[in-house]
Every structure is written in C-alpha cells, then in structure tokens.
Length: 106
Image (cartoon, rainbow, N blue to C red; front, side):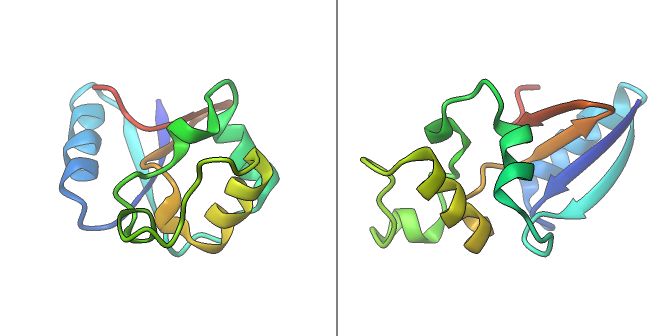
C-alpha cells in the first residue's frame, strides 16, 4: 500500500516508523509536517474519532515551556493553534487511500 507519511524530518522515531512500514512492503511517500500548509478541516480528517488532546504533541516547545496550555480550550481553538504552530501536531499523520490516522503504534 501507498502510505502518505507526514513527519518531522530527522526525527528518529519517524525514521523507525517508516522503516517498519517499508519492511512490511508499504511504499512511503514522506512529507515535512512543518512545511505543509494545514487547514482545520483537513486536520479533522486525521483526528476523526480521537480526542483532540491525544492529537497534541506534548513535547512541542510551546507546551513544554508553558506558552500553550490546551486545558480548557475548545477543540476548534486547539485545531487553530495547530494550524499556526505545526509543532503542536502529534506525529506522524498518515493517509492510506481514504483512511487517515494520527500517531503510530508499531
């Protein structure tokens, strides 16, 4: 299968995840998640059925230093923040055909 894989280039975990998929015979098409222009509606496809808090990269600089506190924010406010600061998006984002996903459990 062809897997569209949105990653942070150079991320050791994303590299390992791609290797696991390739070893299973999947064709990986990689994109830089930080350089991709995202829209709220598009991100919703990747997060469907997942609580928005689980779609946040809790290691993002703004979360770690306390500049961004998602507690108490609406899903829409969190999505808008993700569009502006792509580091907030949990990686990788995956698309296989019409199926979307966020994060990776090998």
